[in-house]
Structures are given as structure tokens and as C-alpha cells.
Amino acid sequence: MNIKEVSAEGLAREVQITVAAADLAGKLETKIDSIKDQVQLKGFRPGKVPIAHIRKTYGEQLMGEIIQETVNESSQQMLTDRDERPAMQPEIKLVGEADDIIGGKADLVYDVTYEVIPPIELTDFAKLKLEKPVVDVDDARVDEALERLASSRKDFVARAKTAKAQEGDRVKIDFIGRIDGEAFEGGAGEGFDLELGSGQFIPGFEEQLVGCKAGDKKDVEVSFPEEYGASELAGKAAVFECTVHEVSEPKDAEITEEFATSLGMESLEKLKEAMREQIGRDYEQMSRGHMKKDLLDQLSDSHSFDLPPSMVEMEFNQIWHQFEHELENNEQKIDDLDESEEDLRAEYRSIAERRVRTGLVLAEVGNNNEIQVSQEELNQGLMQRVQQFPGQEQQVFEYFQQNPEAMAQIRAPIFEEKVVDFICELATVSDKSVSLEELMQEPGSEEADKPKAKKAAAKKAPAKKAAAKKAPAKKAAAKKPAANKPAAKKKAPAKKAAAKKDADKK
Image (cartoon, rainbow, N blue to C red; front, side):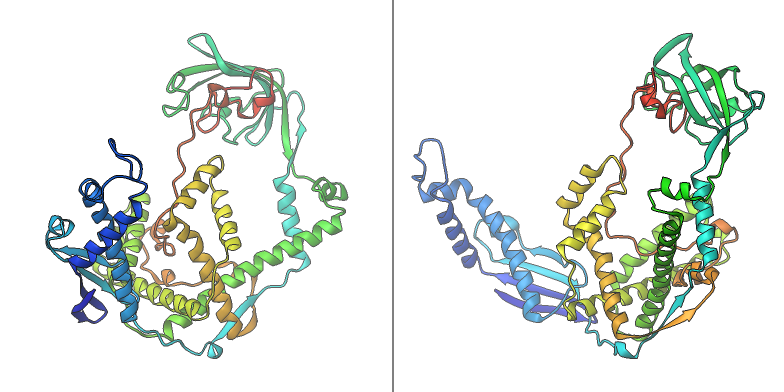
């Protein structure tokens, strides 16, 4: 193998690698020899196919495989010999005609173009000074949390029979749906508890029950959404004959010993202790976010080195793409903002450079100190990601297992957190008492200084760096029987009626 440096400007490199045709021919002979006993061809006994015939039949295919293997091995060896780390996947360009190389008429010659990661001289982390915001978990915080918990677990108390249902009330109803006067499968339910305003049923259904009282009968006229899962119902008008049996009003649960035991706690005091611990963990997580931001800022400010242009460009493109996406979601254009597109691009490029610099520093720290992500940590991260796709767990799990680049999404944040922990242990960390309001504020970031849009909705700057490749998007839910969603856009009237008579399906 012959290696020739074509150019070296800044961090950019171009290297030409030549592998002699004779070397490729030797690899071909070795490969043929290794498979000769397994080759089976019509007219020949197993293991008795002549070498010349194998070469004629499979020579080109085998040589193609050899060339690919040789390119991979020789380019990696070149990087090792030169003690260089490419910033991105190197670009390979074949020189000459592939047919000539496969046919053994020409040497394998190819160009490798790449950018290198520059040498990084790490700062003395012991000199870093970090402040950890701290908020005490007092009784008032615990009481507020308990009140929110009680509110979220509200009970319903029956109203007087003459009371009219209001939004937020719960009505117990029987219903049967008809299209063109004909009942349809899954469109009936008995004794179904429906909270008005919950959005369980399609738009227009729940609203029509407001004002009803116990004993009332009401024909609810709605139309199934055009995108409804059951094609035979999609877009069709339906009438649901409803009978209201009871109207109940919401009532927050009382914070008592009974309330605590209903949650599986031994006592109210034990519940308070558990709430205090949970609040403490929440505060600790928020505190870590602030401290991490402070650390990353200091790492960026204390390190200076040339950045690989390709990495900066990729990071900038991700940021700008998200920025454009947010503008589109907010129905805005760049002209609606207070700054020009030129200024915006300059500011976002500065953010991209900052992120790349910080990322390279963290990677250097991790590599130098042999910080690894264990298989157990990786599995835990994968399980957390899978749980974000209820009903599709197996599909998502297999996606990540079969895609190394997707798994890198899981590994990267775990690795980053471990490196941050490592540096924080070396740095000087001091507690700083702050108010809860200060703690709950989003950690200051480069985004916080982003140009402000004229409209509040456009004030958001791109979120933190997106993963190189996104996890598989949630697939549209499979079409469900009509009974699962009789009249609701998101959930049909009898979604929860699976256990109810005549409401097993929708």
C-alpha cells in the first residue's frame, strides 16, 4: 500500500492511497482457496469444482468484495499511521475505471478527503468554580404538592336530580348510535361515565350534553372525522340517542389518612415524606441543569482551537432547519422578526460553533479518561426511549437494535452526563441559595440571547442539538373497530366502555 498526501490546508486533508493489482490478485486467490470446498455448481461434486471455473463464475463478485474490504481496511490503517481522527466520515473517490481494477488490469487507486479533529489542550478542571443553586423543601412546598395531588385525584359527587350538567361534570349515560337510522356495530354503551370537556368523544358530542339533567333523553348529532380509523364510518353523520342517568360534580379529594392509604402509603406522614423526597429529587434535577449550563459555558470559554468546518456546517444546518420549522408552525416569516436573515444566520452560526467546541471538549475528556457507557446503562436508556412509543415498543426496540447510528442517539446523552459528572467532581462546587422561581427558570443558554420575534410565539430559539438521526416516528395507530371511537375525534364515545355491555368494540 502506498500513501501520498495530496493536500493539507488547515484541518482539511486529501490523501491518495494505492494498492497494487498484484496484492488484490493475491487476496482473490486466498479467498477462492477458502471457499473452494463449499462451492456447489451443477455438474460438479461438492468440493470438486476446478479453481479456474470458480474464478470464472465468481471472480468479479469476489473481487468487488475484496476491493470494498481493502478500501475500508487501508483507509483506516492510513488514519492510524498518520495518527489522525476524522471529524466526519471520510469521502472516498475511486480513481480510474472500476472494471479495470476488478479485471486486474489496474491498481486500486482512490482519494480520501476528510477533516481532522485538532489537538485539544484541556484546561485544569480543578480551577473551575461552579455554583449549585439550592432551594430548601419546606412544609409549604409539600402542602402545595399534596393539594395538587388531591386535585388531580378528584372524586365526583352526585348532584341533585334537577341540576343541569356543566362542563367539568360527569354524566352517566346509555347511548346508541345510528347512521341513516341504522345502528352500527360498536356504537352502543350502557352506564358509561363521561366527563364533559375531557375530549374523550369526537368534537360536538360532549358539548351537546351540557345542560342535561338526570332522566333527560338527548339526541346528539355529530359527524365522524374524515380521518376516522374505521373507513365505513369516516366522514358520516350519526345520531346518538343518549339517556342521562346521573349528573355528578367534581370534588377534590380531602388530604386525610384515608387519602394516603388509598395511594398505597402507610399513613399521611409517610405520604408527606415521599412527597418531600420527590420534590427534593425534582429540585436536584433542576439544580443540575443550571450547574451543567454553567460548566458548559466555562468549558467553551476556556478552550480555543480550530473547528472542523464540516461539523460546524452540519450543526448550523440542524439549528437553522429547526428555526425555520418553528417559524412555519407559528405561521411567521423571517421578515416578521426584529433582525435580518443575515444577522440571524451569523448568530446561529456562532451557536453552532459553540456547541461543536463544547462537544469536542467533552469527547476529549471522555476519551482521555476512558469513560465508557456500560451495556446496562445503554439498555436502560433504550428502555426509556422505547416507553415513549406505547403500543409500538417491540417495533421501536428492533429499530434501535438493528441501527447502530440510532443506538448512538441513546449512547451520546448518557456519555455526556457521565463526562459532566467527572468534571464536576474535579471542579470546585459551592451551594448558592436561590428562590424557587429562580430555580424553575430555564437554565440560561445561548438560545436565551437569540433574536426576539415580534410575536411571542416566535421568541423560541432552536432547541438543543438534535440527534444525528431521529428515532422512528410514531406510526399512525392502526384502524380500530368503530366501537372504540363512536363520536369523538380522538376517542369515540365508548372508548372506556370496553367492559360495558354492547361497548366492547366501537
